[in-house]
Structure formats: structure tokens, C-alpha cells
Amino acid sequence: MRTSLNVPEEMLAEFDRTWQAEGLDSRSRALREAIQEYIESHHRLKQAHGTVAATVVFDYVHEEIIEDLHEVQHEFQSETDTTCHVHHREWCLEAVFCHGPAGRVRNLVYCLKDFDAVGRVSVTLLRAETGMERDH
Image (tube, rainbow, N blue to C red; front, side, top):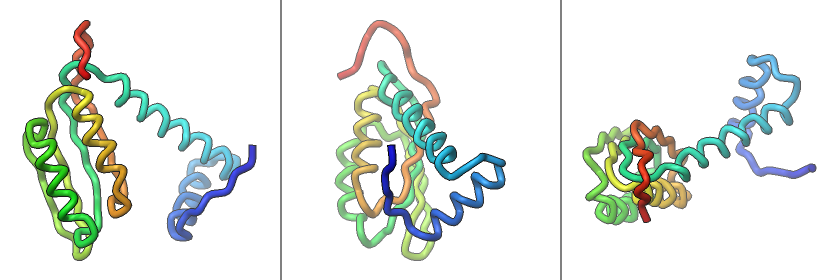
């Protein structure tokens, strides 16, 4: 299947350098692998249940999102153990250390990904309980 994407030129150039350095056959092959990694990451987060510990790291444009981000932080304060915040001129990097029901941590991640001013959200599940109890 053929498709088209809107990708910033700098990002596409870096993507091309990366897949070529890895010795892949084509951009299509590299995109298929990237899409597969994205799907696998989503499934790990989606399948987690019970109580989890996680780090959520994201970057964002400070002026465009700070008020909305404060609302999100208050909404998920019971799942947030601590945060680390660094300013880099107009953008910021933030790490949130979370602990709580998998569904709530998942909702935090999805909420952050929904903002245009957030560049990337990276999640590491540090611990997930796999007992019979499920979160909602």
C-alpha cells in the first residue's frame, strides 16, 4: 500500500541518515520497522494492568502549553511521585516518575501525546503487576 506523509525536512534527513547507517535496504523498510516499534510500544502500555511504576519523558514548547500542562499535572498528581524539569530556551524537557493504576498512567501518556506543543513522549514501564486484578 502506498501512502504519503508530511514530515519536516530535517527529521526526514535524519531518518534517512539513520536507516542508511544501519545498512537497511530502503526508506520503506525503515518506516515499516519504525511503525512496528511504535505498535509494540503501544501494546506494552495498553496491556499493562494493576499497579505500575513508570517514567514518562517528554519535550514541549513552554509558551504554547504551560497552562494546559499545569491542568494535566493537577489531574494526575496522585500518580506522580516526582518530576524533573529542564528549560532549554523556548522548549522544555520533563521527566515524570509515576506510580499507580496502569489505566491512569496510560491516560496521562495519552493526554500528553494529544498536545501539538509536545514533541515526543517516551514511556518506560519499570514495573507492572500481572495479577488477576485489573484497573479501570
